[in-house]
Amino acid sequence: MNQSNSNFDEDAPLLAVKDAVVNYRTSDGYLTAVDGISFEIGEDEIFGLVGESGCGKSTVAQAILGLLPQNGEVASGSIQFRGVELNNLDKREMDALRWENISLISQGAMNALNPVHRISSQIIEAIQAHRDTSTAEARERVAELFTIVGLDPDRMDDYPHQFSGGMKQRAYIAMSLALDPDLIIADEPTTALDVIVQDQILKRLKELRDQLGISVVIISHDISVIAETCNRLGVMYSGKLMEYGDLREIFASPYNPYTLGLQNAFPSLRGKQQDLISIPGSPPSIVDLPSGCRFMQRCPFASQECATQHPPLESVGDDHFSACYHHERVEQMRQDAKERETWAQLQDTGKESAATGGMTHD
Ligand SMILES: Nc1ncnc2c1ncn2[C@@H]1O[C@H](COP(=O)(O)OP(=O)(O)OP(=O)(O)O)[C@@H](O)[C@H]1O
Picture (cartoon, rainbow, N blue to C red):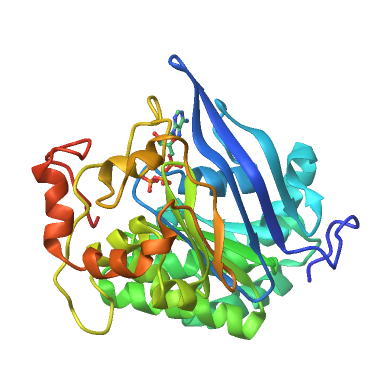
């Protein structure tokens, strides 16, 4: 463990997010992008946060790292790293924690490498900004990091343009590992990469967990990426967690209609290719959120009860939680969700919010 903060509580979870609400101040007033979500991440864990574009995944990542844009704020709830409330840290403390304890691989991180500097100098600079290390020692560390991420250390003095997209992404991962963080947050780490490179990067993230004991949060809109890599997951929709817990348990027995829909909508990275079925419509705008279940307008199983308020997360198994009013008829929902007609009827009845919308895969 990287003990840069003496207030860390070794018995506390690595990361605990509790009832976190994140608002953005806009000309339309305060918009709630993340609405009371709670989850915990333990040691040696790969946690996936999945959901369609705009559901609040990046907002969660930015809130954890203290990197919300100027108009964003954690309005309530708590975000604790090893028992330390991150919202209470000042800028200097948060800057130290970032990189040393939690590091971020953001969307398109590979483009964050500076094109006019050698990759080695960029990583050395990151190391020396936090540690009193000689350049020779830092170079040794860069070589070690290159080996860890599967790059040839002889290439460390190359410029970014001499690397392919996948190699640049690995180089950025090497940089994010430079100070031995306990947790890496990878926000769409493979989106811009082809399927083979994507697979290699995801395998590498898994190996980091296995070899270095680093926990990883992978944020993706693609449930098949999460299925390949994670051992626990949270399914987000419109600022809420719809299903949460052990990945195998959730994939073996999903309880939430949104998870059922997502499973139909993405091709498996390996395994049998099945017919893809989109969820008609699109998520509600955060400018005008419905008072009932956020997924109601696109849910083929919705009833009157769903219009009352968003359902709370309920325990439905061992480390398995789901937010839905219809858990008692889950067997039937699982069967019906596999049928194209079940989702097509939403379009027929005009129930969905955007008649021509649908899930996209990019
Ligand atoms: N600075 C901002 N000001 C106002 N609204 C914002 C701001 N940043 C994000 N939002 C809104 O907050 C909601 C959540 O956005 P966020 O980027 O967290 O979602 P996401 O699930 O990560 O989507 P994507 O996969 O497209 O990045 C969206 O409705 C978005 O338009």
